[in-house]
Length: 179
Ligand SMILES: Nc1nc2c(ncn2[C@@H]2O[C@H](COP(=O)(O)OP(=O)(O)O)[C@@H](OP(=O)(O)OP(=O)(O)O)[C@H]2O)c(=O)[nH]1
Ligand SMILES: [Mn+2]
Image (cartoon, rainbow, N blue to C red; front, side):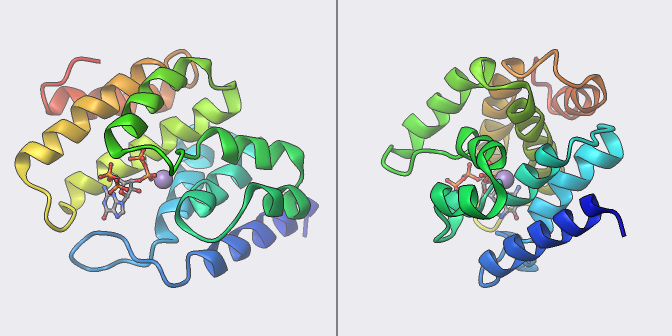
């Protein structure tokens, strides 16, 4: 087996252990790990990304935000680059929900190319997931607001990956949201 495959298995296993008690907000309470795996898969399968550190960052992207994982731990286990990429896509938990959303819009154009790739795939997965199954308790208005906000973030990520951006553009168009 190639060393990249071994590294990816280590990474997906780490993420699965960390997210083991978490579920998605859909009616089926899907295990959370389907999301980071799906984000990495969008990058490789649809985005043509082979950069192992980007794929690892995608697998780990919600571990610091949503589990007991620290950036320091990621640095020790997976190295500086992967840890920095996860840091770049992690929301500051000290901020309010509104402030967090505003920060994502503000930071998007300043993110590194590798972090922008992870953000694009994260948004693409989540928007498709909303279309597949509305998160528990979300009204039609909340869904539309999420699309409008996501478009503001994606605007700052443009010029990064044409294939992923085309897919996102189509989803926004279906909701009448201008990118
Ligand atoms: N569409 C969808 N999203 C779900 C589901 N379960 C959990 N989520 C997560 O919820 C987040 C989107 O909902 P928000 O209302 O914005 O976030 P919040 O509840 O954490 O404040 C995403 O976080 P994120 O990945 O960190 O991305 P981002 O929205 O912060 O960019 C997404 O992964 C689900 O069943 N469907
Ligand atoms: Mn995510």
